[in-house]
Each structure stands twice: as C-alpha cells, then as structure tokens.
Image 1 (tube, rainbow, N blue to C red):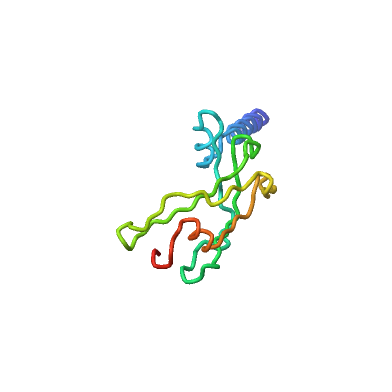
Image 2 (image 1 turned 90 degrees about the horizontal axis):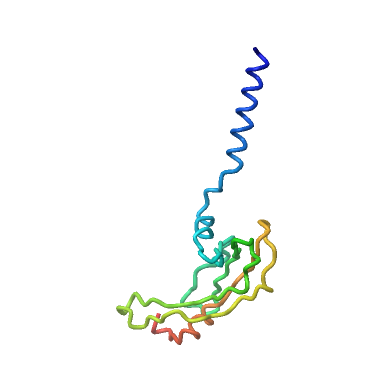
Length: 141
C-alpha cells in the first residue's frame, strides 16, 4: 500500500512538471510575434540605455542604446532596422514640429549575437545629426 502511494505521488509530480514545462512563456513578445499573420513581425528590446537624453545646449550630446532583435525565427528574419527621428514642438503650439525622417539604416551585418542568442547591436547618434536632418535651428527647440 505504501509503495502504491509513492508511485501515485511520483506520477502526479511528473504530470505537474510536464504540464508546467510545456506552458508557453507569459511574455508580451510572444503575443506580438504570435499575432503577426505572416510571421514577419519582430520586436526590438532595449538591453542598455547608455545615454538617452539630448542636451539642447550641446549638439555633440549622444543618444546611445544597445538593442536586441527577436522574431519568430530567433533573428533569422532580420534584414535591417530603420531608425527614424521626429520632433514635437511643445512650446509653440506645434509650429516647429517635424514628422518622422529616416535617420539611418542598420544592416544585419552590424548585429552580433547577444547573450540570449539573438541579434544585438549598439546604436548611437548625436543631437547635431538629428537636428540637421530635421532642419531645425536653435530657436526652433
């Protein structure tokens, strides 16, 4: 009788572990990737915010982040990442706002393998690059 209880308990533990192990991870990324009808969607994850604030008094100030790309094929769908910049004027009722402009394209060849076995890269740009592309003058911001 004691052996039967041990076997029943062991079986219950194995079933519980199996059910737990097979459960889909509860991460938003899997919802995003799972909803892509053509399986071409991807998620960019910020791994490190090296410098994320431009100083409007220093055009050499840098925006720099380390990003990781994840898609349904664990990075195999990555071709390039287009980086856009825009400006929303909150001081002059939007008079100097500028819509999205393509700042640069990061090719797949610029990506290395992250600790998560996904493509990662470091992206950086200066405030001067952004304002020049947007055609802004110091009085505009």
